[in-house]
Amino acid sequence: MSIYITNGAPGSGKTTFEENVKAIVGDNCYILSTITPIKEAAKLFGWDGTKDLESRKFLSELKDLLTRYNNYPFNYICNKVKEIQSQYYGFSNFPTIFIDCREPQEIKKLCDALDAKSLLIRRASAENSETSNHADAEVLNYNYDIVIENDGDLRDFAYKAINFVKQERLYEQYKVSVNLFGEIEKE
Image (cartoon, rainbow, N blue to C red; front, side, top):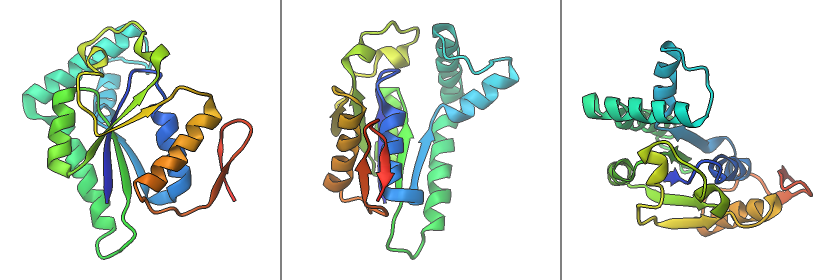
């Protein structure tokens, strides 16, 4: 199993990269996030899904609170990974799992607990954006195992996902190509 704790400034291309990899490796690729249960809880308090600075600050503070209270985001992810692992017990075709996480101390805990690699997606224009919370501001405060530069167009970025799959020796379910719009297509 290959597990990657993924980070990057808002708008850096994390989701695009992960979705590109998923298009190559197929259904045995999972994308999780430590913020998912926080968003679900925030909706109970009136959060409408907006991703503005104030909302990002609210989500970050709520996550910090739940981390201090009972380590809920970390436990949520560990339980999700165990669920995925149980589906593949006895198979040689192990899954690829991406876990989005912003806080350096949480990245370290997840890497240690799950024997994962840390992955940073960098995009200069995203890193220069205004932040409203410590999690977004501390993206570069970690020594990542792998750094992917999102410094070209969508086609360039799609090819970086293809190279990542090859370099990491991930199981390729599909042979793929990249169309003119930078989208991965199955051949």
